[in-house]
Amino acid sequence: MRKLILLFIAVSMFGQLRAQDLKTKNIIIVTLDGFRWQELYRGADSALLNSKFTKDKDEMTRKFWAPDAASRRKLLLPFFWNVIAEKGQLYGNRDMGNKSEVANPYHFSYPGYNEILTGFPDVRINFNDPNPNPNVNVLEYLNKQKGFENKVAAFTSWHIFPAILNEKRSGLLINSGYANFKDPKANERLKYLSEIQHKVPELLGPDIRLDFLTFELGKAYLKQYKPRVLYMGFAETDDLAHEGSYKFYLQSANKEDGFLNELWQYLQSDPQYKDKTTLIITSDHGRGEAPLEKWMGHGTDTPNSEQSWFAVIGPDTPPTGIVKTQTTTYHKQLAQTISNLLGFDFKAAAGHEVGDAVGSVTGK
Image (cartoon, rainbow, N blue to C red; front, side):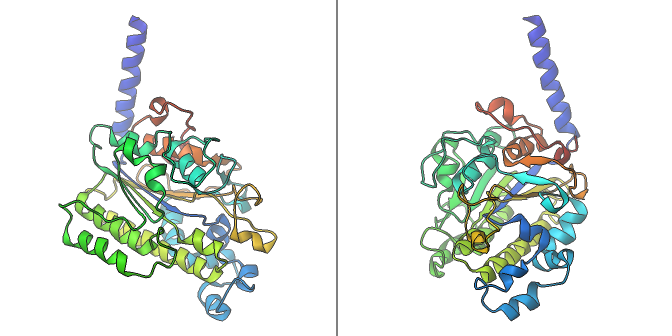
């Protein structure tokens, strides 16, 4: 018994020392639903630009086309390639042999978000219905840690996230779809955004909020409430791809890259967040590639839609740029990576299988 007590004390002290060594005090997680690694690393796809899936081909070519992939991707995603590539890490460039994949067998949204946020590719979750998630997620775990209580929140465009994050059990602040932000302490900006969201065209239907509204609400919340952990989930890249609009898919990705730039600039201007915050960006699944029509879809019947990517920038992550090692990382590793960056061990507390952290992100 004495040996067990000493071992527990030693493990606890190691965790405390590790936390003291870390510079990351806050985490921002952003997902771009269904955004492909192909556009991230290669820029606009010439086959799709010149296909029936692209309206206004001349306009899109002028805006997003260049002879080489490095130039094309900078045109499409300048924040990724002018900031993260210089100061952070990018995973999943299969052209260089580095792979990033979802481990769940289904390759669509609820299973993908469950995997990212719980670290567990649960085969029971084979649906997009609003069924409460039985798995503990890393956000609710962090929300119970000292110094993080009521400092964790999620703003998402897709209305299913209260189920994915099991709002009733987790007690997290989750604002999804066209839900109002109801806190009476909210400032005028948040009240205005909550009201005006009901006056815009519901271009993606009554349940999926336009991403600019999700971003503006999340940013306003960040500025007023100063959370330690914030999740923003964007939806347009997936929905527009399903509709077969390559023009709007590219435009949405480009716009969301601008959101990320604006977010990062704010984080670097605020004393609470400056040089103390890690930003993690990823997608819940990939999409098809060949034949060409397969880019619209994903799932078990769409080859290669398990292929994904993720990017990280923060004070504890070495600025190696594109990761070129011939390895495969899985999205089930992200929950523990998030936890480790803040000095915690989600894997030990989750109560279910959790993937190991990505050591190269945490500086190990």
